[in-house]
Image (cartoon, rainbow, N blue to C red; front, side, top):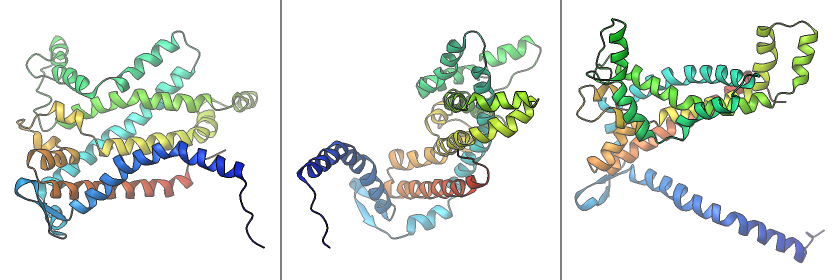
Length: 299
């Protein structure tokens, strides 16, 4: 039996549907898919005089695997992620729980916590750069008031990543708190009422009710936080200039990509860095998607 010919109404509906999504598909193709394919191609080329590219096979990747600066920047990036993601998510869960409780001024606190997420990263970085200043920074002024000798936080190799990590946590907590707060408000109160009748304590309620039902939201926040942490750039770039004595200890992979692409003019090598970071993020995301089956509970 042959396939039924679609009616004029069905054809019209299809045309309207495809017409509605066509601008989005075109935008994704032009601004996302094409640059992605172009970056992969350019990673196998070498940029020469007058910005001309010549094919050089896997030479960029061979050089990349032996590049100590790349591995140091990758180490810095992973240290930043390890410092900011777990602590940031934990603090966001605590703040979301507090904002979900019946306290006065909840709307005000939500706005205050979310402000860093909508503020320009350049402005935030400049403010924190002044706070961390070793000569007249606000942090050292406070420490000196209590008799503690301050240090130059952003020029000390032992403190530069800690200082940057604190800013990263401060910037991300607001957004993550709002997402987790929405997840908490989506949990039915019937579960808590039943637990209260059974005489369950706060910790039992959290681990047996709140955490399992909030786990999909926590998983989403964890995935996005890891991706954002791995591609961090603007904040570190503004806080630690290239002339800084600890630039090597603070440079992230995306910063190294930026310098190769726009300062050194080596777009082929920069593309290989971008492709390697894409592969790393993809592998981590795949691992997360597989591992989430063991702890994420979907209703």
